[in-house]
Image (cartoon, one colour):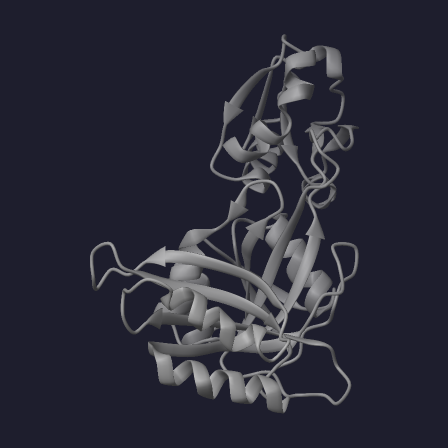
Length: 284
């Protein structure tokens, strides 16, 4: 199996792909999230793995939009702990460092560590694993990178300090994408992701839509609004619910929803991750 991910080898997305699909898989790095979708659609990769939300930074809106504009199915999810480490070439020490490279978001998530070490200048880089690769290639003992331990192993860097992130509650939820929907397995706890556009912009419309789930005791796990590019200042809504259309109450809720919205699409039903610490193997 081949899985596409955004970034370079050693990225958190690649680590998530291996955790979700198995360490033995082949992986294909992509420059953009759109390229991940394209590789799967063109059968160049069997699966795509994308981040959809971070517990500290929030949702990755670009990927919500790509889910709608492409015809792929969500077949799995994984909650990956993001553990930032200070990496440097062999022979380097914390005291020698004068600069550290990383993605701006990673630098922000490690701001307390950087404030405690004012001699180390943060330098924004396009990617955490890309920063590790560049530091390993340059070999300067005064330049470090903030990335994951996986990148350190891949590029032969020393880990000078682990877990330098501000918060231990730093998790990213990744989705696994496939050309075919997930095949239901009896007894599996599932989650469904949908997108819909209200049929009319009138008071209480969203209340009525959400009532479709509340009346059937269906747990609404997440809802996210995004601008509708076809109609200025109108919105479409992405939602995650507990369960799938193999359950009668969920199937009836989807049928009801189709009657009161102008657009509805099931993006995928897939095995639900039980919590941030648990990993689930994705099917498809």
